[in-house]
Each structure stands twice: as C-alpha cells, then as structure tokens.
Length: 304
Image 1: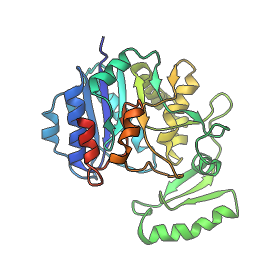
Image 2: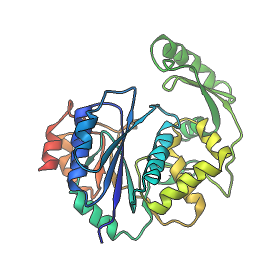
Image 3: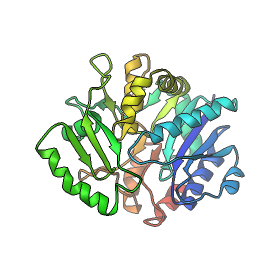
C-alpha cells in the first residue's frame, strides 16, 4: 500500500521556487499533505495560490539562523497535524531549495517497502567517524551561547566580533562566533556515555513513530531542550541524538539526499546542469541546494 506522506517544507525566500517545489509535491503525492513552514520575515509567499494546489497548508513561523528555531518550527508543524486530525505514515523534511530527483510516486513506493524507521544521516559528533572538524564540533556543542541582537551577525558588529575571535586562540572558556552573532561560555552538558551526541543533516525522512518520539522528548525533557537551545546549529544534532538514544529505531544513515560539501565548504554548493549526471546516478530522493536565479535549466531537466 502507498503510505501517506507529509512533506514539511521550511522556506524563507524565493517564493517562485518554493511554489514550483510545492506544485511538484502536491501533484505527485498519492494522498499526502504538504506543510510549508514559512519565515514571516522572509519574502511573502502566494499563499492562496499554494493552497489551491491540493492538500497544501502554509504555516507562518518565526525565522532563525543557527538556533533552535528550525526544530521549533518542525514541532509546531507536527502539532498542527495532530490538532487537525491529519494522518500520515512518513514525514519528509525539506528546505525551500530542495527538489525531487525522482517522481514523487516512486519516492512513496520506495517508502512503502522500506525496512527501516528513518533515513537519517548520523555519526558520533566527538568520535573518530565524525564528519566535522573536532574544533568546530567542540565550539558548537560544548558552549552555551547568547545572541547579541538581530543584526549582530552583520555589518560593523560582525566585524568587531571577527576581531574579538582572537580570544578563542588563547583560552578555552569563551568562544566568539561572528557568523551567528554570538558569544559562548564553556558549559556542562546533560549528555554522557548513555546519551552521546550524534550529528548529521536536519533534512530527514522519518516514520510517524520516530516523529512522535522526537516531539515527546521535546515536551518531556526540558533540561535536554534547554541545552540544545544554547548551542549553535542544534538542528544538526537534535534528531540524531534523541533517536539514537532511544535504541528502538532502525535508522538508515543514508538520508536519501544529494548535497555537495566538497572543498571543505560550510554550506552545500549550488547545483546546476553540470551536476545532472551525478544527480541522476545518486539514488537520492531529493537534492539541495538549487537556485533558479543561478541555474533554472537543471530544474527543467529534472522535471522532464
């Protein structure tokens, strides 16, 4: 049987590209629902047009960068489903710059026969198998950060923070991050041998029982959530850590996403026509990042 899939899209810009993605999802799904969690501070979406595409709903959300906001938005979307009695078997989390590499019905057929509870990139953050430089991991997750205002990550304040970052090199107690506009102090974490920190991509595909476990941890473990709220990029560790700690889920470490971090990039490279052979050969369900203003031909080729 074809599963019922909820596609949760997090967006903040490029309304035309978001509409194109939502159209592909809504027209392709077999009984699924599309929830668009859109940053109210971003470019306005054509909400009426989107909601005419099918079972599509736009949920206004507070945006954020490098904080717990993505997880808050994700949980709010799950609560919306519960409040409205919407049934689903799988939840696929996407950005507004994702695009499907396979027809949506084929993706849903693969989910119907999947012998796992989720497709989640996952690795020990502080282990030998970590995908991240150890210095970055320690700075992100062993300090409690405070933001210095909405515009601290740009302009003259960012320049001042760049200069102040020299303190990172001479002592272990304070960390300055100009990218996020934050200052952090070394803190103790609620994690330990029985609850190790796992990392990976926020863009995951989960069965409903995994989704419900993630929300349960959010609602019943305030100390754990408070810890994550104080870190940088907590969305890249929260799902992985709470799901692996449960010990009851079978997780495929292949997230079924294609992205290119080659060249030690902090962000995935924009994809274009030159990437088409690799995209087609990847076996992934979705890829990111795409930008119509950079290369719209690749999206046309994927549609074709």
